[in-house]
Length: 263
Image (tube, rainbow, N blue to C red; front, side, top):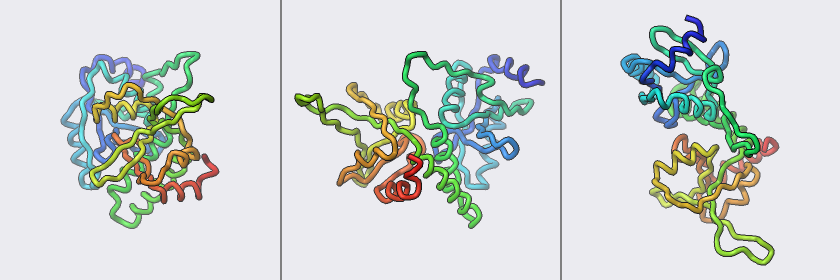
């Protein structure tokens, strides 16, 4: 079956079974060894998907299966693009590695500002978390360190959505104080959340049932993050609903020192 014939069959499939990673709360991703595409895995039947999950337990990779309905599959594939995944390995009676752009086309409205998205950072965080949580041998720790280096570069290059709201009235010159949204963990540590894109905030909003109607987003580059840091803060947390990468002051200083020119 050709790729186009296979793609034409996709709308007739009622349910899809996606491999998800417990460490990232994102689709499990692999870099194709031949094409270097970043790919996710989608099965047409549940049993083979569960077998895939079991096979990876030997490598300490904790995975699970999530079901996606036919009516939601195109939206799901679109989110993969934002997460830095450009290919899907579909597994049914046949196996097909297909570029997502061959299935869905994103339509960005004219005249609307380009949304803040960081797919390169997203995929580097996914690979780092998958590697560091399973590293046991020296070789595996070296690989995890390499993924960390790549992630740090992309953290320095990224632009983030930082939730905030205006406080009080503006002064005579129109200046107004801004308060940044903060999250606190069970230990009392205070973090300002940084979101790589609006979809990541929606995940966090749904998870925490946030109903704040006056929330605004301030797009900040890495070199502007220091302006947000205040005494009493523990640091920042990138995408708290999924990968939850923590950045304390020491992390910020290290990234700025090594990769500040990338910002």
